[in-house]
Length: 299
Image (cartoon, rainbow, N blue to C red):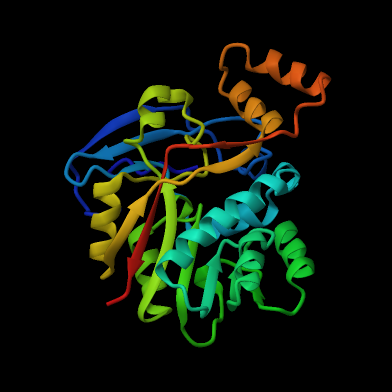
């Protein structure tokens, strides 16, 4: 694994950086990423003093990332489908508030197709892009022939035409070049088309209160925004800022306690055993993780 010893900010190219969190740098492997991860290691996180963007110093290439996500275990992710359906409906609500008339959508990182399925139910059509082999196979079964699916990264996808909306749910924090990625997304939009996305917010109440135990500090998260740095990234990519906010996601009580026990929260492991014994592990709980969503528009 190679760590860049002369880093620049991926958003503004500044060298005016500071170490924000100095975690252990471990090699990224399929077993260390995704919901089924067995080990936490978020690495060294730098923060730009000029634009406030936070980023992991180790930056794997797009090819390395695509290989990792293709092989990652998705079993824990798929066990949370009830909560993910609830979350997908919340995400769909954000899209529909800003684009009520159905059109063509591209869901980047579509996972097993839940959000696309919700949008199809609202009369939309479109495509999905997903590098994970397991999740692409599930999405293909769920969506059958109702939309185009591409088993690859966005950079590798052969897409036809333009889209009215691009959705990037839990995506921009994973890419090696977030500015270049947004620029590519913009070129796939119709004039006036929208990008809807969410990202971990380093200045959220959750991030500041939990510090190193914030559950969004993950090995595969290369980028950490706040409102200002996300707005600057959008502007540099040639996108207009439309709206921002926060929305909850839902997980089972068992999964929440599993993640908290990984972060060594006091009593989390004991409570996880207890809710399992009492058959309460599948109770769905909406939570705010410290994420920020944004709606961007191509002029």
